[in-house]
Length: 179
Image (cartoon, rainbow, N blue to C red):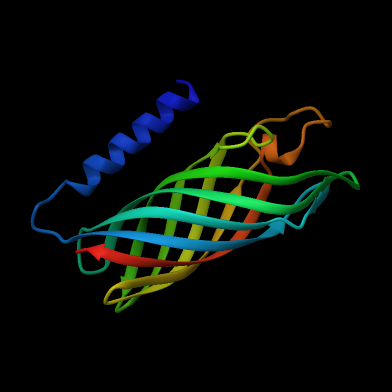
């Protein structure tokens, strides 16, 4: 199964899960995020990320929900590999599905999916992203640690943007426009 087929399957499963039961509440939200790099092997990343995303969430019970997110994040800043600045920007399209566990207005969540390359210097990789946040009447705010594990043993000359093996910490704010 190639990457495009995996993405299509992921989107299909997310759409099915959002429409699974008519008795539960849904919400759609549009949001923005700001990210900074956390861990970079064999190099340095001073690129800050600015993103937008669309998120859908389905409450399955009082404490548990499933969600789907599609976004675009643009990173700008010096990115070096083995001490030499080689890149000044890159872009990703994160596509994820996940779950949240609520305690009153607060939640712990985890998303899984793909960071699809949106620039020629990045690769499509897997995403694992735990989060912590709060949902208020029309707002969803939180922090998320997005990990992009190394998915193959590339050549030493390959950069981590292509092969994975980096992470970034982000803050996000979503406006809930449909409940």
